Amino acid sequence: MIDPRLLRDDPDSLRAAQEKRGLSPEVVDRALEADAARRAAIADFERLRGEQKQLGKLIPKAQGEEKAELLARTKALAADVKTAEAAQGEAESDWRDAIYAIPNPAAEQSPAGGEDDYVVLSEHGTPRDFAAEGFEPRDHVELGRILGAIDVERGAKVSGSRFYYLTGAGADLEFALVNMAMDQARAAGFTTMVPPTLVKPRAMEGTGFLGQAADDVYRIEGQDTYLVGTSEVPLAAYHSDEILDGETLPRRYVAFSPCFRKEAGSHGKDTRGIIRVHWFDKVEMFSYTTLEEAAAEHDRLLGWETEWLDKLELAYRVIDVAAGDLGLSAQRKFDCEAWVPTQGRYRELTSTSNCTDFQTRRLDIRGRFDGEVKPIATLNGTLVAIPRTIVAILETHQQADGSVRVPKALQPYLQGREVLEPVTGG
RNA sequence: GGAGGUGUCGCCUAGCCCGGUUUAUGGCGCCCGCCUGCUAAGCGGGUUGAGGGUAAUCCCCUCUCGCGGGUUCAAAUCCCGCCACCUCCGCCA
View: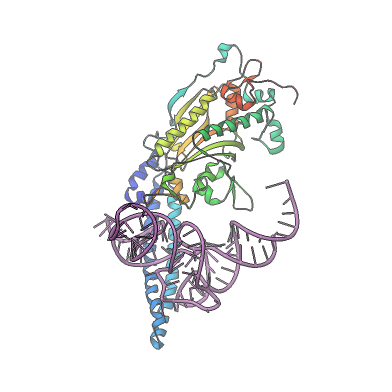
């Protein structure tokens, strides 16, 4: 959630932030009204409650007629207190709903507009020129079949569309990537984690995935729990209701977890292959730090992502995602998009977001600094999302005979293999 | 899944049976001050968090004894439901 003080002190900045995202400023006015109503309800309740407590203290000392009279008065008052308390509760929940609907205002540097209004920050490597090399590149589905690495037919047979099996070299590739990613993160000082991926509503809502994004989330039938779409959720909720010692910041965690996404509303998009799937495994970086340090930490996360992509010898670019495409929680977001040869375009491989204090306010996470309790920031960044990374590696490093060269840095994690060779049968 | 037990302001703990004088006791830790060649000890004070009033870091008020309801003029205390943990039984990778 946004800082309630900001709503009261500078609603115009929030209206402007809504405009920048291409959204209506109406939610701001609704929240302002709810805030006023809430404060009035609080004052009302507290006045009555205070009176009740004052009178209540006199009762044990009173005797006879005086006592009877006090009891009569407080009895009447008790009903009013109850009514006022209920009204306050309602006003609080209206206010909460209103303020929860306001997204994190985008950073000043974030470009205004929607999905297509991103700004390219940098380009790394050069897309391979297969025409010059004299052969037509195969797409990852074909390569996956040749290498015995990806089985989408049987994935669909067993689990439905957008599911797959990683087999043989494909499965080996996943473990290699995960281990390599974990090693990189560990070396950078991250604490490794394997988090739960089935979570309560609090964790989901706290990270901003139950608003408009709820359509994309799997809910367990008959149970108030959700499958997470990213380990950002359990990593953010990890410290919920805690006050962290400021001395221990930044706290950096790296988690391996499966991710589940309904991909509602993306019918017809990326139907071929494993670019867009309902389940995939991912290694995710997560930082808790001070608000002052958040932007610098964001740059560091991006640095670890580019270091990773460089080691995989991929061609990619970094974009500054536009305000309207940030999602509820992020204040700024960088996507790393790798070149996918058979698509002739860049596709998102990793992404890093600065959520400032938006999630920590919802999850009641704060820091203590020289005795003072203050809000802190959370940031997240992908190190490796398995299927898309496999797509980029296979397509980028393929050779004319259908084999795939293994990037040098990855070789030690693949039993020293330098090339993935085609297999026969299936 | 069944039975029993436990959940108090950082940690430990008193209070709960018998509701009100509890602004929740005491210890440890921590902070400030005093004292003391230094250190330790000793003495005094402070030490949950949130929200509202306010220009306000002073002050006043409300909420906070796992969570949510209920009873009552009044709930840490009585009643109901839920959650977590522990012990035992059952089941199970």
